[in-house]
Image (cartoon, rainbow, N blue to C red; front, side, top):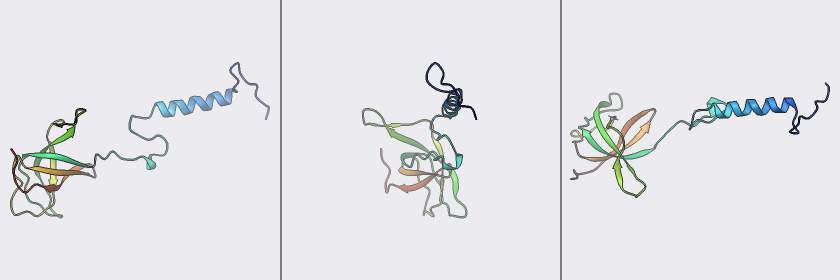
Length: 127
């Protein structure tokens, strides 16, 4: 194999092609996604979130979770105050309860396999 001459900028044409491929690969990756092997990509997971019930959440079981409830998610803003985030979202519940979780109740929800699930609920309603 013949040795390549460096270009005006001190790199060979093979090196330039390699740099171009790397840049196209990195710049073509959607924000928040790791580039490279997709099996190593980390899925989005917001973890546990504070929420208030906007549509009552029925009791459920592992085999038959309820899906009729909705909650409003809350996040901290730059000033450190809690504020509503987006529209209310559907929440699933596999906790066997004595009664439905009523509207206005403060609960915690978790993101599991692409869905919001009830994690815990408060003992009384808040104003």
